[in-house]
Image (cartoon, rainbow, N blue to C red):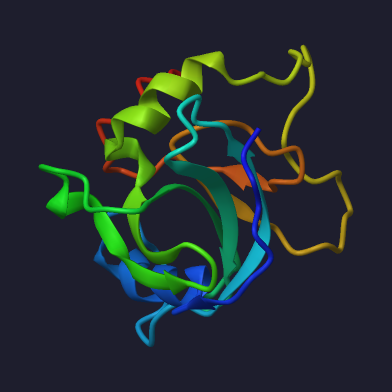
Length: 168
């Protein structure tokens, strides 16, 4: 099981994502840049204990409607050879020192662990849409993996990263 350190990160994960998200072809936020808040997530274990694997859900309120993104991230103690294109950024970890954060879709450790991850039970007949007459704002979940029970509408981006090999 991964050890989670409760310490400071500089810059924070949200600060890294605020800089990185607008460079993605599937980003649909406002022109002024993302206004992000962490909305959830989960972690997977690296059997070797070297790579942090996290799926973070962030909600961006900069556009006309709040949009949530499921962002797979990996954290490493050294650069990943050949993955410069997938670098989200670097940060200083209060315990572990410098960490390199990557788009997890391009990290072989995440890709290897994903098929081993538990999956939610199938829910036949259930739809991820708000009930009729609901006054709650609609939310969209943009993700290349998974299903979220609170998503108002699930929309696949026109450009799907060629990673993970997950089918809807």
